[in-house]
Length: 213
Image (tube, rainbow, N blue to C red):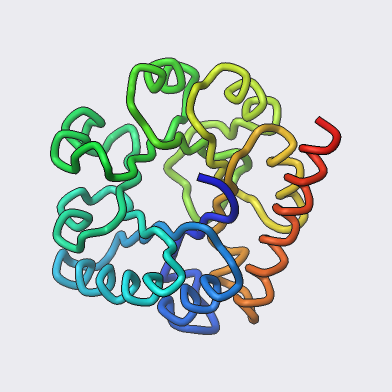
């Protein structure tokens, strides 16, 4: 997992439909999309998942379903992202099989330690900074917390929470393998340009870090 990871939020899509935002972001070079739906019923969620999968398929960008293992299975999505109060990892892995992507949010140090025993594809460090799009999280990790997790965890890290073009480089330098954004793309007047800028910042910082570790 590396690059810009778009987490969708219907309420944040102020200028375009969610589908249009995803399509534009995919064209700009994002690396992954997590479909997060808190208000749609099961049929509506599945319909949207299938639509988004069709949009992402030409660019071979994986679709991750937030929380709902059943939707991921029904849609044939690439994987799921689960939180600490969602389906336990062991059961999710049993249902999805070894080839599907599973990411897990970590909100406390105890979560990070427990994740070491799990065959996860990444852990979501949540939140790095406070964010209005997700208010049910614990105290923000900050850059120091992100760096501490990087030094301990065996898993790739996806940083999420309050990240945008202004602080993305800091998160990458602190240890993020991928940076998840919501409003920075969903709420943008030009989602393509915003996603392109984020991807460029990520690439530039990653290359600089490789040259000057």
